[in-house]
Image (tube, rainbow, N blue to C red; front, side, top):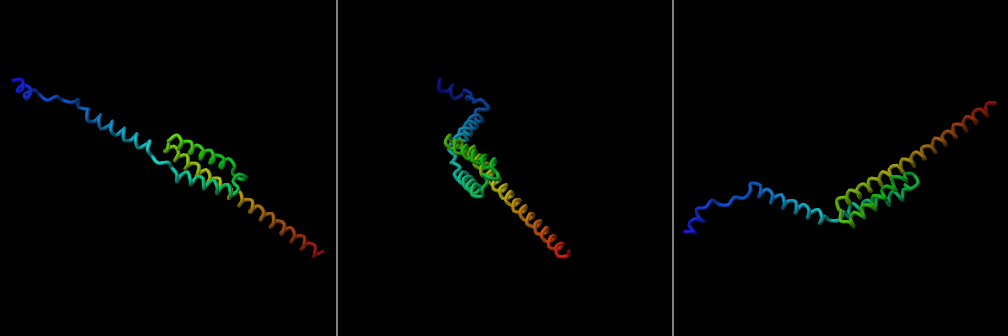
Length: 140
């Protein structure tokens, strides 16, 4: 008869949120696992290195030293983040390093353009003065 009583007993009920808790726990474990297994941001780091090299070749150290220094610093931090397996932070820092290096290149190009423009103005002014001397010297 004991067997019959077990069959007639109400089924055990799980707490109403047990399924939801299990699903959330699984999702958190999966998300945590993905974050730690993210690949190193090699492309972003290579791009930042190339941008810094380009800025150095453009003489950014003379015309945009703070921006170039900041780019180098962020690239070093990105490399450290990769070593610490903080791939998202490494990718962000590498992108910032690239942007800073590109800014240094742009500021360098602007400074060089301004210097060339100033030189042209000086040359034009010298020509104007020379023409004025030639004109006044011939009429006396």
